[in-house]
Length: 496
Image (cartoon, rainbow, N blue to C red):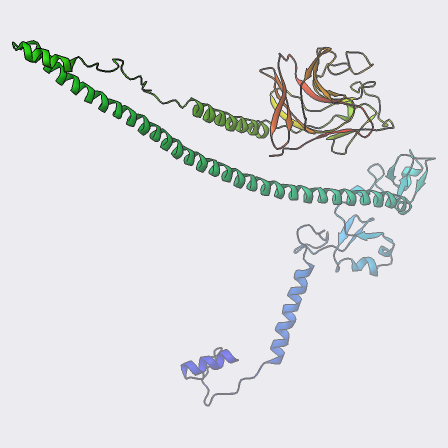
């Protein structure tokens, strides 16, 4: 009504928008309650019809012909689904009331016996399958059968256990994801801090080098000035002496030509005075100032920076993630859930027999094949014999012979700790490695193509412990040998 009044106010004429009749004076506008109720009822009917329409994913009514409504029940006798309107016949008809109704389902045919066309309403526990009433007296005669509801009650317990296990697994995975996200954030922060610190270190180094360069330049120039001063003084003295000698020489020549014998004899006495030492002053001019020590220092610094860069490059580009192979682990070795930690236990682990398992020597191999350039790190806690090794897959697994023990055959190479001493071992030959202190973390670098195997002590710095050059003829596998209860090896992730 307000819009009509606004229109009349704007135009000045009181014209009906429907029949175009003009009114004078302006009539009082009122709501047509009957028409309004009719429109409201029509709108509600349309909304209700829209709510009944089947949407994607809903079961459609099999009776609706034009607009399919959402089915609310399915009949297991009619094998059809019905909406709220068409299901009423099953409620009203005495014959249809006996039909079995279930929640609306799309897969009605799956609930019918494919052999007899009857409803699957019995569960055969003998064959663990749903059957119909005719199957009971046919091929399932004499079998143990129950109603699906009874079997459901039994299986519900199993479902709850599986569900509980699934929930636990979800929680573990969510926790692990959260931990990994935290690790990622820590890694980002650590990397940022490392970049910041390295930038500061290099800036300090550059400033120090610039300062020393200026000081060395000044030192060289001061040395140059000092030496030039000495040379200039020497030249000045020599030139003065030369000038005196030239004058003396001229007078001697003049005297030699005089005819006055008296003057000759009187003057010669003054020239017979000794001239002094005839030797020239000894002074060696160095045409090139020596900076050999400076060259050595700069070269050493360059080598150290280059070495650090190459080691960090190895740790990032060639780092490989290793996992222990449970099928190879000796029964006295317990592996963590992620197969990255091996610990010596007092009781043997219950593991099935396996052709790849070490049955006598307390050893374990990793799953991953090593055939290129690889780097990995291991944290070790061991007070007894322990060995970090690489081995061919063909190494023997059975018995306590040399063929199955790392380092005692030509199929394995190991860095071994024994009674606080370190050895590199291969083919039953030991080379003692002089190590004053060794970090608990050991880094191993393998270049299979060039036959290079290196072991490092890893802390704030990397110190080469031992390097061997050989020829590898087969792919290698990382392995560990460890003795002593509660001692362990932990395969580490990248620590930049």
